[in-house]
Image (spheres, rainbow, N blue to C red):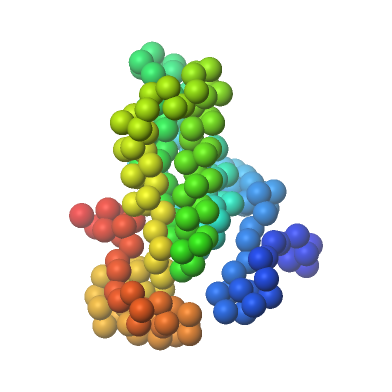
Length: 195
Protein backbone atom coordinates (compact mmCIF):
# COMPACT_ATOMS: atom_id res chain seq x y z
CA UNK A 1 0.00 0.00 0.00
CA UNK A 2 2.84 2.45 0.76
CA UNK A 3 4.13 1.87 -2.76
CA UNK A 4 0.91 3.34 -4.19
CA UNK A 5 0.97 6.44 -2.01
CA UNK A 6 4.53 7.28 -3.05
CA UNK A 7 3.57 7.59 -6.73
CA UNK A 8 0.35 9.59 -6.35
CA UNK A 9 0.43 13.09 -7.77
CA UNK A 10 -0.75 16.30 -6.11
CA UNK A 11 -0.85 19.96 -7.15
CA UNK A 12 -0.13 21.33 -3.69
CA UNK A 13 -0.30 20.43 -0.02
CA UNK A 14 -2.95 23.11 0.45
CA UNK A 15 -5.20 21.50 -2.19
CA UNK A 16 -4.75 18.12 -0.53
CA UNK A 17 -5.81 19.67 2.77
CA UNK A 18 -8.77 21.75 1.50
CA UNK A 19 -10.09 19.55 -1.32
CA UNK A 20 -8.71 16.14 -0.42
CA UNK A 21 -7.21 16.28 -3.90
CA UNK A 22 -4.87 13.48 -4.89
CA UNK A 23 -4.43 12.43 -8.52
CA UNK A 24 -4.23 8.81 -9.56
CA UNK A 25 -1.34 8.26 -11.98
CA UNK A 26 -2.26 6.57 -15.29
CA UNK A 27 -0.21 3.48 -14.37
CA UNK A 28 -2.25 2.97 -11.19
CA UNK A 29 -5.51 3.72 -13.04
CA UNK A 30 -4.62 1.00 -15.56
CA UNK A 31 -3.82 -1.47 -12.80
CA UNK A 32 -7.26 -0.81 -11.29
CA UNK A 33 -8.95 -1.20 -14.69
CA UNK A 34 -7.06 -4.44 -15.27
CA UNK A 35 -8.67 -5.77 -12.09
CA UNK A 36 -12.11 -4.80 -13.42
CA UNK A 37 -11.40 -6.49 -16.72
CA UNK A 38 -10.13 -9.61 -14.97
CA UNK A 39 -13.43 -9.93 -13.08
CA UNK A 40 -15.61 -8.94 -16.05
CA UNK A 41 -13.73 -9.34 -19.37
CA UNK A 42 -16.36 -7.58 -21.51
CA UNK A 43 -16.83 -4.59 -19.21
CA UNK A 44 -15.55 -2.07 -21.75
CA UNK A 45 -17.60 -3.38 -24.69
CA UNK A 46 -21.01 -4.05 -23.15
CA UNK A 47 -23.62 -1.48 -24.21
CA UNK A 48 -25.41 -1.28 -20.88
CA UNK A 49 -22.34 -0.20 -18.92
CA UNK A 50 -21.97 3.41 -17.87
CA UNK A 51 -18.72 4.63 -16.37
CA UNK A 52 -18.85 7.22 -13.59
CA UNK A 53 -15.84 8.71 -11.82
CA UNK A 54 -17.20 10.54 -8.74
CA UNK A 55 -14.01 12.53 -8.07
CA UNK A 56 -12.58 12.75 -11.57
CA UNK A 57 -10.00 15.46 -10.96
CA UNK A 58 -8.24 16.19 -14.24
CA UNK A 59 -9.43 12.92 -15.76
CA UNK A 60 -6.62 10.41 -15.29
CA UNK A 61 -8.93 7.47 -14.60
CA UNK A 62 -11.64 8.60 -17.04
CA UNK A 63 -9.12 8.97 -19.84
CA UNK A 64 -7.86 5.42 -19.33
CA UNK A 65 -11.47 4.14 -19.29
CA UNK A 66 -12.20 6.02 -22.51
CA UNK A 67 -9.09 4.63 -24.21
CA UNK A 68 -10.15 1.07 -23.43
CA UNK A 69 -13.82 1.54 -24.20
CA UNK A 70 -13.38 3.34 -27.50
CA UNK A 71 -11.05 0.68 -28.88
CA UNK A 72 -13.43 -2.12 -27.89
CA UNK A 73 -16.55 -0.53 -29.38
CA UNK A 74 -14.64 0.63 -32.46
CA UNK A 75 -13.55 -2.93 -33.22
CA UNK A 76 -17.15 -4.14 -32.77
CA UNK A 77 -18.58 -1.44 -35.05
CA UNK A 78 -15.86 -2.05 -37.65
CA UNK A 79 -16.49 -5.83 -37.65
CA UNK A 80 -20.23 -5.14 -38.07
CA UNK A 81 -19.40 -3.18 -41.22
CA UNK A 82 -20.82 0.12 -40.01
CA UNK A 83 -20.05 3.20 -42.02
CA UNK A 84 -17.69 5.51 -40.12
CA UNK A 85 -17.13 3.17 -37.14
CA UNK A 86 -14.80 5.75 -35.56
CA UNK A 87 -17.63 8.31 -35.37
CA UNK A 88 -19.95 5.74 -33.80
CA UNK A 89 -17.27 4.73 -31.30
CA UNK A 90 -16.64 8.33 -30.25
CA UNK A 91 -20.35 9.12 -29.87
CA UNK A 92 -21.05 5.95 -27.88
CA UNK A 93 -18.03 6.30 -25.62
CA UNK A 94 -18.70 9.98 -24.90
CA UNK A 95 -22.35 9.26 -24.11
CA UNK A 96 -21.53 6.53 -21.57
CA UNK A 97 -18.72 8.28 -19.68
CA UNK A 98 -19.51 10.52 -16.69
CA UNK A 99 -17.50 12.32 -14.07
CA UNK A 100 -17.68 15.09 -11.54
CA UNK A 101 -15.32 17.08 -9.39
CA UNK A 102 -15.81 19.77 -6.80
CA UNK A 103 -13.08 21.93 -8.35
CA UNK A 104 -14.01 23.75 -11.58
CA UNK A 105 -10.37 24.04 -12.67
CA UNK A 106 -10.06 20.25 -12.58
CA UNK A 107 -13.36 19.79 -14.43
CA UNK A 108 -12.27 22.12 -17.22
CA UNK A 109 -8.93 20.36 -17.54
CA UNK A 110 -10.66 16.96 -17.65
CA UNK A 111 -13.03 18.16 -20.37
CA UNK A 112 -10.13 19.54 -22.40
CA UNK A 113 -8.16 16.32 -22.09
CA UNK A 114 -11.16 14.26 -23.24
CA UNK A 115 -11.84 16.58 -26.20
CA UNK A 116 -8.16 16.42 -27.18
CA UNK A 117 -8.14 12.65 -26.90
CA UNK A 118 -11.25 12.13 -29.06
CA UNK A 119 -10.04 14.49 -31.79
CA UNK A 120 -6.52 13.01 -31.94
CA UNK A 121 -7.89 9.45 -31.80
CA UNK A 122 -10.19 10.27 -34.73
CA UNK A 123 -7.28 11.69 -36.73
CA UNK A 124 -5.16 8.63 -35.96
CA UNK A 125 -7.92 6.24 -37.11
CA UNK A 126 -8.95 8.11 -40.26
CA UNK A 127 -5.85 10.08 -41.28
CA UNK A 128 -8.22 13.04 -41.55
CA UNK A 129 -7.50 16.07 -39.35
CA UNK A 130 -10.50 16.46 -37.04
CA UNK A 131 -11.05 20.11 -38.02
CA UNK A 132 -11.85 19.11 -41.62
CA UNK A 133 -15.38 18.24 -40.49
CA UNK A 134 -15.89 21.56 -38.74
CA UNK A 135 -17.73 22.43 -35.57
CA UNK A 136 -21.10 20.98 -36.68
CA UNK A 137 -19.57 17.51 -36.60
CA UNK A 138 -17.82 17.90 -33.25
CA UNK A 139 -20.35 20.08 -31.38
CA UNK A 140 -22.54 17.14 -30.21
CA UNK A 141 -19.49 15.29 -28.85
CA UNK A 142 -18.14 18.40 -27.12
CA UNK A 143 -21.61 19.09 -25.68
CA UNK A 144 -21.76 15.55 -24.27
CA UNK A 145 -18.40 16.03 -22.61
CA UNK A 146 -19.55 19.36 -21.18
CA UNK A 147 -22.76 17.82 -19.81
CA UNK A 148 -21.33 14.52 -18.57
CA UNK A 149 -18.23 15.93 -16.85
CA UNK A 150 -19.78 18.12 -14.18
CA UNK A 151 -18.64 20.69 -11.68
CA UNK A 152 -20.48 19.19 -8.75
CA UNK A 153 -20.20 17.80 -5.26
CA UNK A 154 -20.58 14.04 -5.24
CA UNK A 155 -21.71 13.85 -1.61
CA UNK A 156 -24.85 15.90 -2.21
CA UNK A 157 -25.18 15.23 -5.96
CA UNK A 158 -26.01 11.56 -5.50
CA UNK A 159 -29.13 12.50 -3.52
CA UNK A 160 -32.32 13.56 -5.30
CA UNK A 161 -33.92 14.75 -2.05
CA UNK A 162 -32.82 18.25 -1.00
CA UNK A 163 -32.78 17.60 2.77
CA UNK A 164 -30.81 14.37 2.41
CA UNK A 165 -28.39 16.11 0.05
CA UNK A 166 -27.85 18.90 2.55
CA UNK A 167 -27.18 16.40 5.35
CA UNK A 168 -24.64 14.61 3.14
CA UNK A 169 -22.91 17.86 2.23
CA UNK A 170 -22.63 18.95 5.87
CA UNK A 171 -20.35 15.99 6.61
CA UNK A 172 -17.38 17.55 4.82
CA UNK A 173 -16.41 21.20 5.02
CA UNK A 174 -15.63 21.57 1.30
CA UNK A 175 -18.89 19.86 0.30
CA UNK A 176 -20.84 22.06 2.68
CA UNK A 177 -19.23 25.20 1.22
CA UNK A 178 -20.01 24.02 -2.30
CA UNK A 179 -23.64 23.34 -1.34
CA UNK A 180 -24.02 26.79 0.21
CA UNK A 181 -22.51 28.48 -2.85
CA UNK A 182 -24.13 26.49 -5.68
CA UNK A 183 -27.13 24.82 -4.04
CA UNK A 184 -28.41 21.31 -4.64
CA UNK A 185 -27.58 19.81 -8.02
CA UNK A 186 -28.42 16.19 -8.77
CA UNK A 187 -25.66 14.64 -10.89
CA UNK A 188 -26.47 14.01 -14.55
CA UNK A 189 -25.55 10.33 -14.28
CA UNK A 190 -28.19 9.95 -11.54
CA UNK A 191 -30.77 11.83 -13.61
CA UNK A 192 -29.99 9.70 -16.69
CA UNK A 193 -30.18 6.40 -14.82
CA UNK A 194 -33.38 7.24 -12.90
CA UNK A 195 -35.34 8.66 -15.88
